[in-house]
View (cartoon, one colour):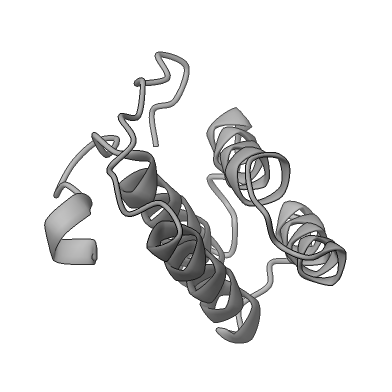
Length: 115
């Protein structure tokens, strides 16, 4: 998925690619930088994940709660989450969501997002 839907630079053209890119941007900032660069862009990425994996999905209530918990933990930027488990779990949800949306969905670029 990464090689096919995530560009080298900038936002992805599809929701499928942008979801994956968002999770990995959040992981990279926490693990590599300790969230030192955390700003509104990372909140936008978190909200994008929630929009698609919670509001626009058919995941169970249990899965949606887990996604919400993971994003809430990531948003606690003063205490960066540097282990892989929750990021890997979010990637798994992105893959499941993408398998349920085989037709590519165009991703309108967010002009406020510079991450």
